[in-house]
Length: 496
Image (spheres, rainbow, N blue to C red):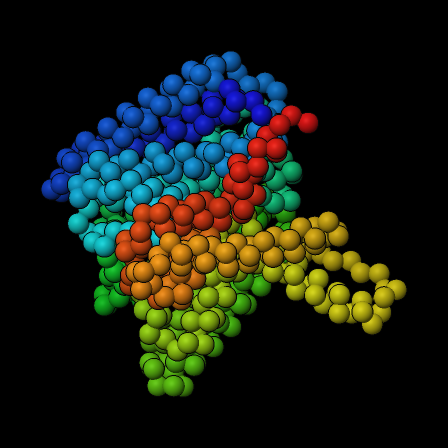
């Protein structure tokens, strides 16, 4: 490992974070709502502390330009360390601004933002100044595009080194990344991301939201993060005459942003054949449609709700869950147990690889299902030659093995983490349903879980140690396990 290189790049990431804090501080200075002067002071002070540490790290790392490529080992360490450090400093505004958070809660809230999880420890969101609520949304917007992908797009001087950073930022890992220079591809991703953000904000403003709420909700919808400046989330607009239009518009945006963003890049380059080969998106659409119909029909059949009301609630809830956004309208904790089981499976699955969504990803599910079919057929026809493909790409034995290993590891971490949370919360009366729901919500970056962390609850009742552990799980899930776990294996740092 090259400590100076890692220190310098991490310092630049913190410098970008400080710039974002300053931008939110300027908004708080210009805003006329009471309390934003405190938010302004907290944001500017946080930016000063973060910027000072960043300058020290950049200075310690040296100012010489990076000409050679960044070794894969160093790139992986930068990815894992960068998310941890940015989440830690991103919590400073919550600590410094009234009504104040303790350090564990602030780290949890910040990590939930940057990982686009959407879980919160705030019991009364509307009690916080608008400047802090804007910062809360900005963290998710930055996390959605991926701090490191944004870093690659803006700081082109990294040259060939940017390829290592780009490929190890899990949200935008995919086969299409090799079709052009990484810098050009990341810039294209950033433009598409900005387009969706502007489109969502314009649509919400046209439907009657204020500009502040439109911008905040658009940043968290496009990033599939789910933070809202309202205590009731999108449910705040449920009783509006056009509330169903607001939900429909956000549902569309969430679904589009749970598809592979690299698909949009290749479509803009008029590679229409790639659209025909797309399996992830088609499967995601089919799964969403089937789950919506099953849940709506089931609730209507049991007399739980009228069909149109059930269809409205199911449509929004299924998409917000599968995209791992976590916005809330209906309280699915009141739904039948079988419908909650469907939602739990959607939480684990998540959206498509290369999207801002979390979870296990549809692509890996396809590899698993096709591999299962292959093994069943092979048991009866052992001499038959098979070719396994997903999205038009051949999957070799190594790829299949890696997917199966990831699945097993993912499930094992979920089970062990549920046990850890249960131990940490011993004596508090927290149920195993709540422990499991909190773990799935954290590692899948979904936001709400089940039990005491359902869509109308928050994570503020957990102990500090539990909040820190869940924040670590959020980062672990956001980086798809390996980029963070490698920090705990020093043998991987050594030169080889």
